[in-house]
Image 1: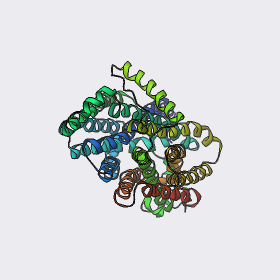
Image 2: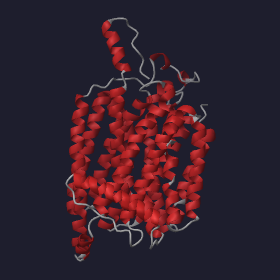
Image 3: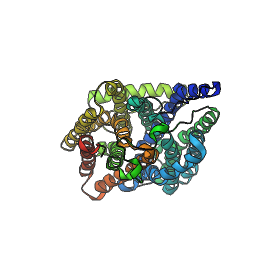
Image 4: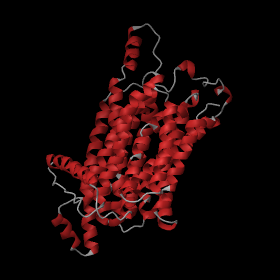
Length: 468
């Protein structure tokens, strides 16, 4: 947390009070995390959309997530240097502007229907978010008492999950919705012409995103954010075990190295499940949806259409009479991320009251059980078991991240950068699942990977977290 100024001068006292007023910075960080979730999880509907528009295989379409999350690996350490030079606030402004450039690149990508341009645009979006994440995650972790770090990360995580639950729902209506007449009209066109028309659907959301990012960058440029350090000055010379003076890198802490792997597989499993949920549903051959699923889809469809009409957009009805469709799948993807949101809301008071590591053990074990049960099941039940994994994912990041940087002392910032780099798991796990789905035995075999990811997280919660 920020070290309060000990000087008794009025100016110093004012500075101390400013650094202690964390309400406005927390609100600003909460808005950023909402943006992270909305932009990131839109990829879950963008992936099957581009699979059709650009005529891709499962493996090729998974490169959507590779381009986006690969930026975390390439940009995390450079982002640390940028923040050291520019500071938190200016780094955030730069990150927002880089994201705006990526969003604008979707226009020529859609006009030419070139998959490489789409990947470049996603890479720029990922690079901008990486810069924001490297600033925001450690910033939130130390923006108040250390004992409430997991709860603070959970609070911004609620905003992250809310944005993440909303964007697939809206994106599904924009990309896969539309009236029966419009769909029939598009179906009557020659394939190339139909694909060109469908490619234009993605331009509106990303043009709106670019405008919003530019405005948000202006807001942060004018906003006063306190510059804080990762640790109080008196703690900077040594770690919790008193050995930091003999260490040369954050990687000399085994619990941090194992934590990097934990973040890698956590992000990989979370992204992989969301990315392949629609394809997993299509593979089930569901011809008739249950009454519960139909009611859920229609209810959310009505609510979202009201929002679309409010913003001057045409309503986009979803037809549930023909069984599982991509539009139905988008609602399930939204439900998956909504489960994370509910888990975060419920988890905040629980994390303050109960042992955080014990809760992590419980949700990791549940994740293994749910994925294995889904692999052994068919139909809607298999899909809903995966949707329930969203609840399990909810508290993993806010517990694993503080555990991994615990006791790093002067290496806290370096350790945080390595943990952000580990988000590259979202670039590697989905293509691995895509390869297994395409050439390795099908989607059921591919879903063994998430089960193994949850098993590693269970190991970290039981043993790997220990500061050695």
